Image (cartoon, rainbow, N blue to C red; front, side, top):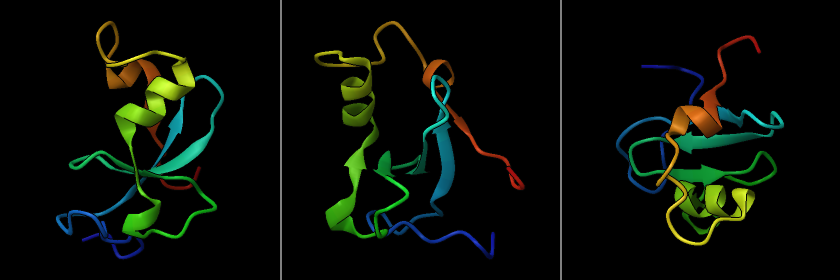
Length: 83
């Protein structure tokens, strides 16, 4: 169990991990099971959670499913410890 990672307040199933967007390095927190996203300035609460699909679609200016022609690895990546 990762001692420094918070448990997801939405699904309570696992931890929230640090990720970033590949295009500009913008950091965010992601629970990759329920696809909940939080920006760094937000408290990890259900009320602040966004869904990854919505966030990615908005960033890419795509209407609808942002994953029709791409996969997660095209857009986001986990942030390794120490970075």
